[in-house]
Length: 413
Image (cartoon, rainbow, N blue to C red; front, side, top):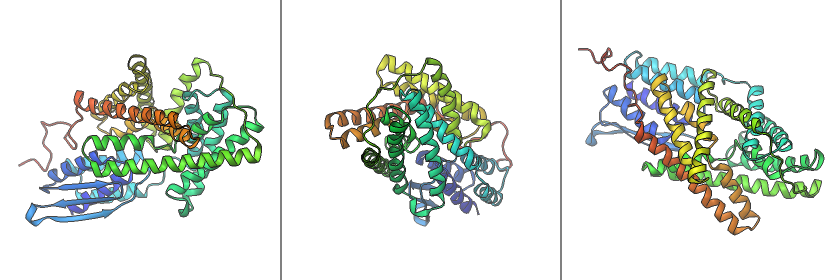
């Protein structure tokens, strides 16, 4: 039954967005605590293989899985179950039942709340991208539309995979051109980019490079390929939508966004992390810590940009967010992803990569290559910050008891 629990745990962690490195660390550490010696695991975004027993008598299990949507609340709950089983406070049978209850639990936030979060998150992101009042309003409307489109797509299995990203990019770019012609002149590119911010695979790109840097080559390569395909789907959808929108409503005027006053940045710095916490299904009690981590990352990135340059400034931002997530894990004994993932969303190079692809599609080869190099350099700097944080403040050993001086029931003679 211990093996069955470990396999169900790995499936749940993978489905809620755990990285390959931490997933494998949890499985090996938990297996040792449960007496399953010589445990080995191999994880990719689409499959998991786990082996138990000595080399000559191994039993290998393979799980066919699909990349799931990130659910920070359920991810933290699953890790808590693994801690209880590892510490002997819960049996593997009870752990399996707890995992089933977590999977069957309804979403933390309803459709209306999630849709509002899409709109507010897009509007706040537009401010970070240099949008003015018109662009922020347009981005918020586009974000609302994206949220409603995702609800519809959730009931249509045929819209899964890369089809949804392509369709959403097409519809939002057409809507952005229409808003520019009907609602007044605005920067269509900024509004479209902010409206699509949630779909951009910047976090996937960063995770892929992090896995490659830690020698999880198969998982990192697969994630990198997936991020590239998503970029292509979104870029093609936007290019097609701009052409169709211009043909239907007329070419939008080319205008420069009028920047908002400084206080708008402070508002966006609170609204954006709160919106991302809803979109990523984090627990409401974690919202203050998510806002703090997001603020630390943004200001750390700005400080780094002022001293090291825009791209290398991501190193400081990633370092600060990773250190904050480690402190959160040690203090709360909860998954560091709860604050790490939302904090990184304000730093990941997804928008830069999208602009690179757009420039290439407009046959601006030099600008596209330069922007692509900038996006890759930003991602590498961000990963370097995460790895450096692991050296400066090592994460606690997975499933290490809170009090080493008090043995668990399984450890008492």
